[in-house]
Image 1 (cartoon, helix red, strand yellow):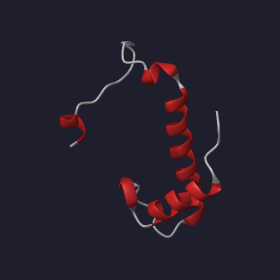
Image 2 (image 1 turned 90 degrees about the horizontal axis):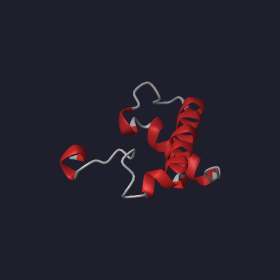
Image 3 (image 1 turned 45 degrees about the horizontal axis):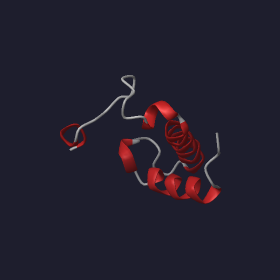
Length: 70
């Protein structure tokens, strides 16, 4: 698994530190925002690296419709 770049982590941490993505309690908490940011990005990259998450024929993949994400 590849690690997210420091630039990506810092950018996401800035967003989280300003209350982004429903992560309450991270406002003004730079270190906590960086830790949460790194976890979010690592989990995201792990999902994209797993073949099961991209195989449209795999029944184990959780699929969402546009109605679910709206």
